[in-house]
Image (cartoon, rainbow, N blue to C red; front, side, top):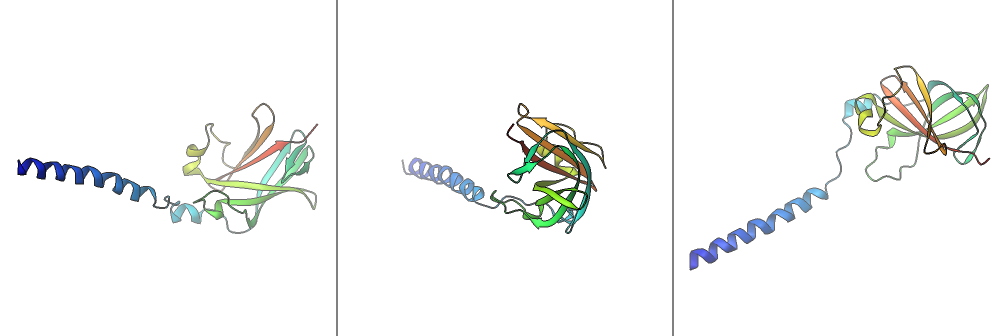
Length: 160
C-alpha cells in the first residue's frame, strides 16, 4: 500500500507543478522585435511621399480637408498605450501643403518582414502608397511602403 500512496503523491506533485511553470511563463515580457529590424526604423525626420486624401478627415482630432499632402515622418515618438509596445514603432507624421503643416497623426511603423502579421491585404509596392476606405467609409488608412518599412496611418472621417 505504501508504494501506491507514494506513486499518487508523486503524480500529484508533477501535475501540480505543471500549471505553476506555465503561469511563470505567462508573466514573462513579450519578445520584442530583433535589433536588426529595430535598426531599420529611421531615427529622425523622413519624407514618406505624397498622398491624395479624397475627402475631409480628422487627423489628431482636427479637420484635415481633402487634398494632396506631402507626408513627413517626425522624430517624435507617440505615447504608447499598449503594454509591451516598442515606442520607436509608434511615431507622428505630418500632412504638409506648401510650407504649412495641415495635420498630424500617429503612424505605426511595421518592418516589411512583419507586415503579414498585422495586415490582411498585400501592401503597396515599394516606394508607393495607397489610401483605403475602411469600415463603411467611417475610417481611412493611408498605407505607405518606403525603405523596407510599411507606414500605417489611420484617420477617421470628418463630420459632414
